[in-house]
Image (cartoon, rainbow, N blue to C red):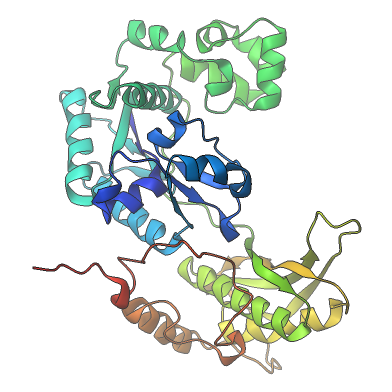
Length: 421
């Protein structure tokens, strides 16, 4: 058996944890540079506010209904996600983190328990310790657990008194559940496959579960389609992925809060991004041998500009000083005057485990893992950015807009909640 735990409206729920006055009020959270709506409360959804809608288009409706609006607070959401996954790991020895707000737990050997009660215990514990509402789906396959979770969430959105836990432990239960889902709602069925299925008059999940495996193999991506049909019929084909696979590449990019025109500001931006990318490498205990820098204007320009350059490092590295040295060099070689730049980024390739590093005797900028370990330890203890490279700048006026960001309550000493007696 598998359980899928998903935090409801995760970004919105994180905001409510530290501001209880927002409970049962309409809220939306915006994307980078306050561009689009990426999370909304049920109350906002009921007002007709669309997910993904540009903020400037939705603003009149948001103002009309006095909807609380927040810029994305990734420091808060990331920390709350880590706390959520850590707490869920106490309920099972097998935990697969699927996304920032969602994870599978293996429940093999728990069959003698009342799994419905166990699902409620998980949900109530998360709410008690973190203040995050969740939904729990439990079923004999990961795909059916997804189905159970989705239906549990739908029921809780329609009726707040619904408990948010659904157990599909018999064939009768999951067959009935499949009749309530469109094929496009099934995990693993994308837009193009859904369109194809509709052309064959396969419109809901129950219809799909009845097709022959050979037909699914022919029309739905080979073995992937065959496994999907088996999973919908209660045959587990997808194992728990307990060890996250090493990333093949790492990208750090941001749109600027305002137009950037100078080479110095672009260099400062890519230095910051290179530092962040090197931190990601060190977290995964990996190193990279190829660094790509790219810069671009707004894609809505009549003649948009885009340029990139790849640099092979003398030795693969995760040292911030090494990557930050080469990133501005890349900008220097592709920068063009007279362009209004709106975005820049760093892409790292050639990633391999740090223990397999092949050093270069003649490398003028050797890595210093011990120094980086000290820097990471200081920043972990006292907050991100406590120690940073001078080339990252101090003002960073190009940073993305986040004028409505809440405090980083769990990661910044100066922004922790205050209690007044």
